[in-house]
Length: 168
Image (cartoon, rainbow, N blue to C red; front, side, top):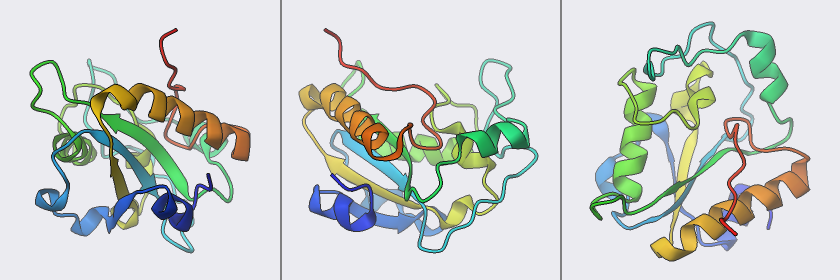
């Protein structure tokens, strides 16, 4: 698998909409995985303070050197996440992506996965792509994508601070 726009399209990802103009109603409601991608020519500029919401009284901001250390040169994919059905079966891609975007607008999150995205100065230019998958395939798919990314780039995407694993 290639972690490029073309590679993700070949893998079945759709969308590729800029965060700044993303209409949540166009995102499928089903479960799946999603990716945050840098547009062509994107150069990272880090904000001193994240736009993301506070989680459990903790500021999501990291110092500039820590952000720079997480940046993966030449990588297009900045974050890979999953959107499961939730305990009541009412979650999915639309709701997960909307909560991710709300988090970037300063609303308190239920978790803070992907928080480094919201310390990029031009986060509204980043693209969101998604791939619908049945709930039972999500843990394996997310773990496999993380593993493949590490094989290609030697580390996780910029905003993935924890590697997904499947339960043995």
